Image (cartoon, rainbow, N blue to C red; front, side, top):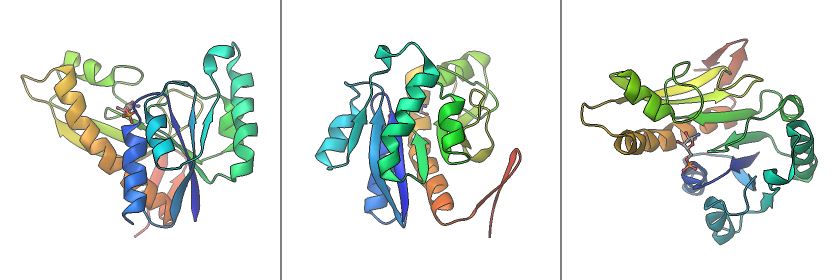
Length: 202
Ligand code: GRF
């Protein structure tokens, strides 16, 4: 059984999709053992409570030092024996404190085809650049921003009349599929990391 911690800061639709797919058996041998949020009012926490998933909230606004903050998270997670951390709309850059404690065990979903359009407002960046295709990327988290080894990507066509909202909505649908696929590959032991490259067994 893979014990997952999902980190959120807001809406939490990727977290919910992961949880629903675990419940449906689409993601096997996994459970979301805890949801972590840096914001007390993150919308996704309501769903966690409704589904009786344990919640940890450590308000990041109380901390000036990122390392100190991530040390607190490592401490708080210890009792849960977490095998995999899924960042899902977690709006903080994680520091080496967390990365060294969970080496190759932290993944993230980004709403663009990395390495294009890193950082915030990736869908807006893609529209403004004029790309014809964008999408989403599930990747391991390393010390850089949106720079870790790529596990999988899904492509979404960009239409001439797209707005940030319409493109974001189409990408989000693919995010929900991609994140569950990536977690399944990891929980079934099919993901092999070799430096920057990830290969999928079988
Ligand atoms: C998603 O677009 C994700 O790719 C990005 O932030 C958004 C979070 O959405 N990192 P949600 O909270 O999962 O609904």
